[in-house]
Figure (cartoon, rainbow, N blue to C red):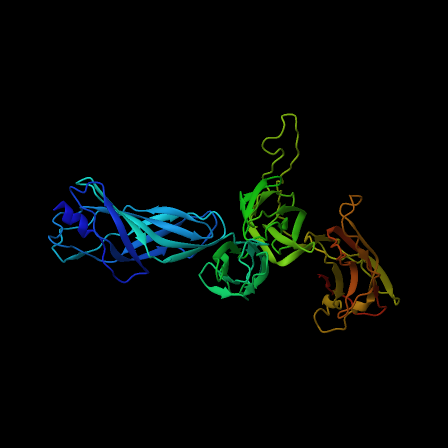
Length: 537
């Protein structure tokens, strides 16, 4: 039974990569299992990659064609394991070991039944550039249950697989690029005469091919490839694919819009704010400044430098003037860019400030200040006047055939301007005719004494009380003249104050005037009465 089992393990010919003759087989215990006769099998060798970098391992998978169980079959499951050697040629010569496989068959096999010897692998690491060939070599099958080892010598096989090892490398001038930009690349270690095609793949997987390059002697290449304007931002890659050397990727990041954040996001003058951001051009100088609500710079700007990945970090000290945000703009040709900029919202707290930053020396002194607003509401008062009680009194007249002029005085008027404005004012007077209201001819429609017979003169307009601190206004007394029933005369006036800057008017003023009345030589006897009307506007 042991002999039958051992003999049944020899694979029969089937579709594969190359035909191998296994002969000169030996057994470590012929008494239990005689070596099988010479036999042929199809063996497929499959490398995990067709090209690798020098020093990088590649896995070679050995695959047998189907095996057939001879009489009396295989009554034992998982009876044996297989292993083999692979002959390496081409760029360098060596032999590598493959296996062992998993135990087989998974269940007993009747005479003439088929089973599959499981695949097994070998690992190969190239040490020099070139193309390597792999040819199936001697094999071995072990029946562990009986301690039997059967070995056969391979012959007649041809190369079943090749792997090209290269020193191909790629590098980019800038590891970050903006949409619509250009990636400049160089490479070395490529195989002279092969074709290398560049391509750019963005973070969404969209690939853009470039122009193929034929590698010159020496293996060095250089070129460039455009990044689409619609390229997705984030981690992408430049891939150089050689017709022989295979693909060599290099990471390239597509930058999005610059960002900026601030911590803390509020504070008063002297507050040290930590700034951070991303998507700035690597190594770029970025100007940082506070800005007002209209995005105008506030205070003196400072500069930060983006690192090799486009990350920005540093500190900003809040100025004494209010700010609405902290802005950053990349300097391009020494001037702030109009597109490569970002801002972090900031709430300015005028009621706090930092005199000494944390960690300052004990002996250090600092200065800061905070405002406290003081407010008072001022409401304007009236423009008004008051007059002394009583009437204008003229001395009586006895008719004697001549005209008489009698003197009197206007009752004093107190004008008060408490409005708190720049407005002026005018005090005017008119008078009715003096009608006959008393005596034997009273209210009979007799001719009156005309208002024009009353003259105003010696007008005064002075502060109240006299000699007090001057008021904002300095009013002007009128020039006087005959009173009229229709045309007012000005007793006193104050011009409007200035407007640039505005000048307040106001004060308390006493207005007076002397009056004289001409009584005609011939008038009806009785009492004559008129009214002086004083208007303030």
